[in-house]
Image 1 (cartoon, rainbow, N blue to C red):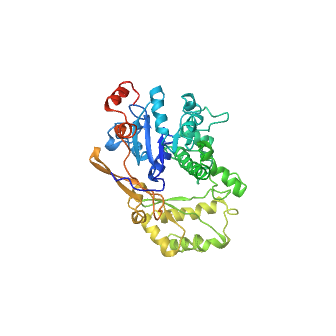
Image 2: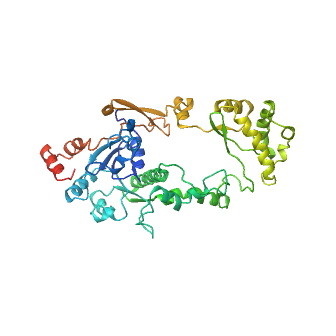
Image 3: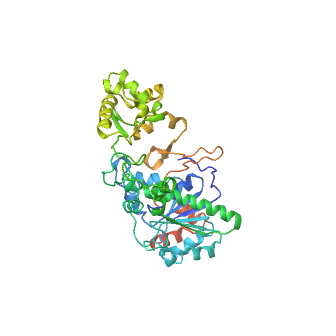
Length: 415
């Protein structure tokens, strides 16, 4: 475990009440240096039971998923639904700059802990609310699993390069929409912090995850005045073209292009294919400068792609990358997770961070900083907290509770 050092948000404190939908927000703020206190219900957050688990040992204290979303946080247990718990939370709010939460709209207000209540305790507090559809509107009370948010955000409608006939599909089994929401919540929180610096006033930041993931399809229409369809993310083509190609040990990204761009796309690769003996007479004499996906029929596309596919399958990703650099071809390998772990570029920039887990007697490698601020780069300052790991530190050391009072609160299920 590394020691806490100064960061961009080191002067500020965050109370993190989020479930899975908002955990990434607190993680980013913690890695930026804020003192993030993750508040879990007694017994721990439900997401601790989500795998994968450390060495496949199913244990709420060994969830790798939990580890990844809760670095740089301290952790306490508290039931804010109990009157005693709500009162303790109000005491914590007095010294907090941010409260981040992902309860259903109106839940905190029902406990007397809504923004209108919190600003009376601390006029400068910023409440960041991360919900599937926001605090208002006809969908505000709907639940929003990742799949639902992708669907209602139009993401699956546009995501595939290969065929417009392919059904919509989910990006990954990880909740990418929640990561979008958490990231945008940090942006909203920082804007609110700037406003507070100018006015002294806090505010509530209302984050709709659906709105966060809707920017891609809507943004394309705003820029290009076209509705993106599956299989046409790059060009509104009438033919099916390949963008992801299999090779000897994986896949590469590549697309044939004609016109002036052929000199950087098609011609150098075609010359390489011909040098290696994979091109036929038709391919060797093909007029790349006058080639266009808009006027070429599918039969022509299929023939050139068949020759290319056979060539790619004789090369590894590294060999194709080396050739792309040598011949100045706009082709690039598709990295696997293993490739990322061994990437010389990421190693040079110290992207990967080794984090010590004393309770496991092990060190785990994490994705680290996403920006290289010259003075205060983001960094993982500590591993994710165990259940109630910092109860004594916060309740006794900061709020002044005695060990006896702690036992009473624990016995009553408050902490």
